[in-house]
Image: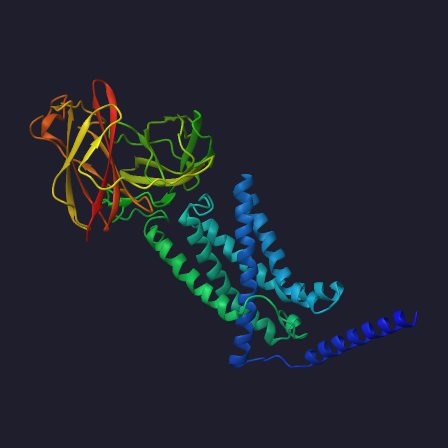
Length: 468
């Protein structure tokens, strides 16, 4: 009994000491102006921003995995942002021995206003950026938009935190006990700088300022007084248009339905212009560029495109929707995942010859292309050593898709008219199938040539190295 009493006495003494230390810290006056106040407010803002970022990311991942709607995903992310924010504040206090009944009011008083403002601004920005909420977790637009939104939210919360602390409110509550936790402010600050650079760069590259707010910048679209951008297909949104896929995962080697819509300001698009004899070209390419499909889906009256597809190998596949609307050309893209064990395969070495699975030999001619310069690609087809006179396919001698290794940028390619067969129903033969394009950077590219012979479409794939 005596030992038990001594233990209680010791515990009471420790608690009294802790309360005494907390009380002593409570009497330290917080700065009310100047640089000292700004430093405390910055530390408080970075602390809240860490919780917001963790909550947003986890919420978006869970919402996407469960297939929740945009609204449900937003609500989940907001709720988790508060949970993570309060948790980051509470854990150090609980570890220091403060009772939960004392910790909860401190966390609520410290973080509620700051996190609330951050979440309001952060999610408004995500809603405003076209395609950000519809972008998948594998889409750089999603991560760039989220990074940009969080940084702006943090900038907005800083003056609020400074004002609250100057009046003895907000984060003053957690500073009073003198018990702090979480990542060092310098580390979080460095991360915020990286996020700002990354987010701004992504949105600039996606054409956020010039295109995605509904403008039709001539630098990225045809039919508006300028040349077409040689690179497309890096995002799910451009020029106010967004690609919305109904499926994010597909079974392997099983015929299944793939459906999607192109939306303009949230409304399904139903009026498309014919380009290369079709209203929309659907391209599916495996992320390692070792798989390729070119399909022509059917458009329903509700604006939904549908097609059947059987992707043979597991992994990430890029889905490109290539179409023309209001005299502007678009290529929008998203990723889908094919279930199963993933084995990435290296690209074949660059070569000027390729063989189709159907027994045709294709030769790639022309000068070696250089980055940033217009290049002509001249293909000739033979079978058993004899020239093949190809039939017209999609309004030309052939169809070519060029994708850049890594980000799978989709190059704009022009089929070139041939003098020898002008106006003829045939467009090939030994004289070649010619295209014109511009390789935007020194890199490795994969070229997928499709041509038609004896009523069937054949595909030849080339690896093309482009120097500076």
